[in-house]
Image 1 (cartoon, helix red, strand yellow):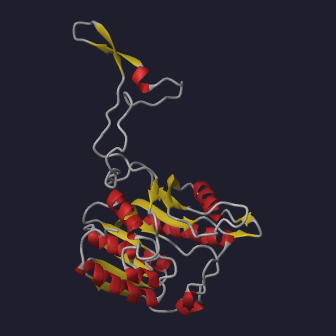
Image 2 (cartoon, rainbow, N blue to C red; image 1 turned 60 degrees about the horizontal axis):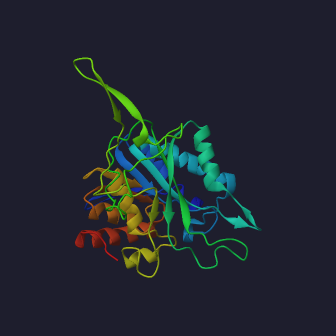
Image 3 (cartoon, rainbow, N blue to C red; image 1 turned 90 degrees about the vertical axis):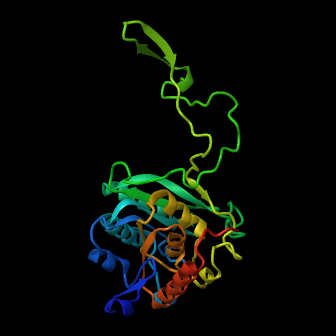
Length: 306
């Protein structure tokens, strides 16, 4: 990263609904209280794909992975719940995949960090991104980790929708021995000592389905990001993505922290969903952009609809 920022005084700016922090996120997190936020969510600079203006970001390969391990460790110190970062799909040079998202997952695992199943950010990939002999890139890794155990708060059906299909019979699935749950018998005892064989069943909420781990954001350009000013950032993601994680993993009126605030998409989703936010960015240009985004979101509360 640019040495221009290393000695720069870090600033904390209060905004309606939260705070903006100007400076290196690792330095800010070192000053934050442990377990002071409910969710950490954001998207760091992808490896060596953009210079990000005055930042001159050039980390790639294992250097990028090592940096991201530090970011995860610092994030887990300040977060009581889920830490989730959209880390892209790696880069391909001379027909070789860099594999950095997978290497990051492996290094976090080797560090003893409690990983959760990765999620997937799905969108319409850039035309021609598969080259002449591969497929278009439509999904990006979202690497997730916690401090272990059950999350202190979650609503995994917050972004669910009613089931699209009625079950063609009793809902079931197979267990390790291959038997279906609704075929398995168990013994129930009565007070008088008689026994009865019953069929095991599971309860399903047919009103709202668990949305699954692929977050489909559809088109992400041309006005589909939630705010036109988001396009002033080099690598914005849609409000639909941050909205999903905030409503699912940050309690109402809780705190969400985005270490790489960028255009302010995370803070906009926090404002619109009744959460509070802390967003940091090393570039002053992005702090100014987030200020505008925060004022816009506070003036236009409510969910963005395409």
